[in-house]
Amino acid sequence: MVHPRQRHITAGAAEYVVVPAGRIAHVPADLSPVDAASLVVGGATALIALRDSVHLAAGERVLVRGAAGGVGTAAVQLAHAMGGHVTALARDRHAPMLTDLGADEVLDYGATTSDRIGPFDVIVDTVGTELNCYRSRLGRGGRMVTVGLSASALAAIAASSVYGARRIRTFSANPDSAVLRDLAEHVTSGALRPVIHSVYPMEDITAAHQAFERGGVVGKHVVAVSA
Image (tube, rainbow, N blue to C red; front, side, top):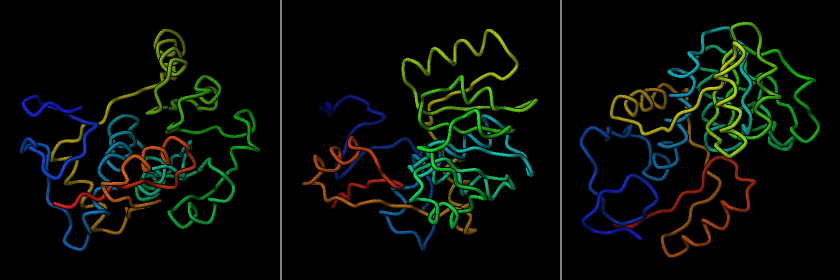
């Protein structure tokens, strides 16, 4: 429930919303509103994770866990554009799509255990489980960031800050205009494109939430709002 006189950051859907000027940017001319909506959260999260949190450099080995989701598909594309060697961990049936997005290698998470892969310079985790197991697959100087927060993830993040050289980072993406402009430039250059699972009209928003909760999403669900 959203109170009309209170400020809200997330978790609302409406025909009109007031946004601070420092949180908006122009959408590329050839990008539809639906495509643009699908990229804001996932794309900005992936960009901040790779560029600002783990500082990915060209030539580094990158593992993306949960690579078929909204953040994961963006992370695969952006890591590829930044010159990383990208290993995507997802369902085996998503391999053709992820390869097309720029993954150099796709591993079936149902048949792959952490001790059989790596080492990696960078790990981008969108799942939030087994963080210590995957942290052990970082090479010297490796960095790991997770956006899949759970009770076990928070414990692993806290523990990694106390012992060991490979700290697990996390953050909450709240992109400003500068980040959104950078994201738009990646879209314009062809380095980033939307991956949309389904589009729901506003009257079917309950079905959209139910589909999200069931999991198995490839890219993003989008709720189309008619002004």
